[in-house]
Image 1: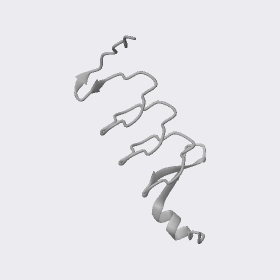
Image 2: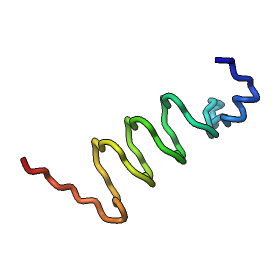
Image 3: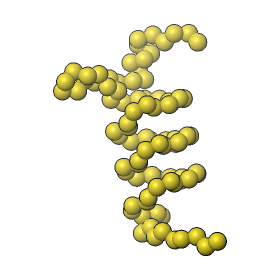
Length: 88
């Protein structure tokens, strides 16, 4: 792969510094074709084609095409979630 230029990088990613001067990513204006090793403190405006290993502290406005291994606190399709025990 041809190495990206600083101009190309800055067209895809916005950076900022916190109150202690630590650099962080403010916005990504493209797709992530790999992993995010850290938290997303904002929204994902498209699909996640992989796992979320942690909590989703917000809304999923679309489909979950996989497993939820934890709790759902809120509504599904506008209806209050009720846990149902499976029979054997």
